[in-house]
Length: 120
Image (tube, rainbow, N blue to C red; front, side):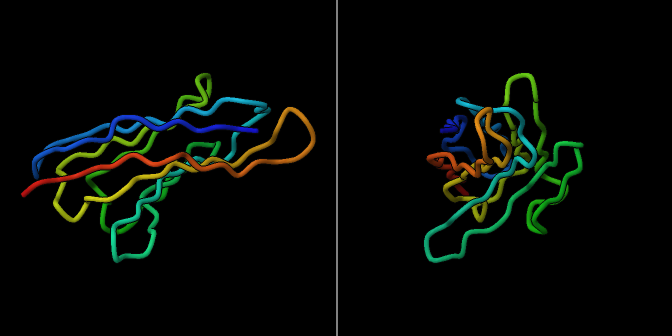
């Protein structure tokens, strides 16, 4: 199994910043895509940002220019730097990673979620 553990969520005022981290552990041979999604009550889950193994990124339209995704392959960790936060960014944030196991097969794992709340 591959486990993902997120950290860094919390309560922040509008205009503030937070940095989320997500570390993977387990039988990992390589990690291809890493990403962040969010889910707010009453809304569909949406892509926040993704980064490929080659470093190519893509962002949801609502966070472009404010959020930055990065990865540290040595630590099997993905980060999400969130600046200029808005109340509409309030949601549970989940990381996702896809890759190959040290044993046969691939994995597609999700973290447990971390809450981000932005007050106005």
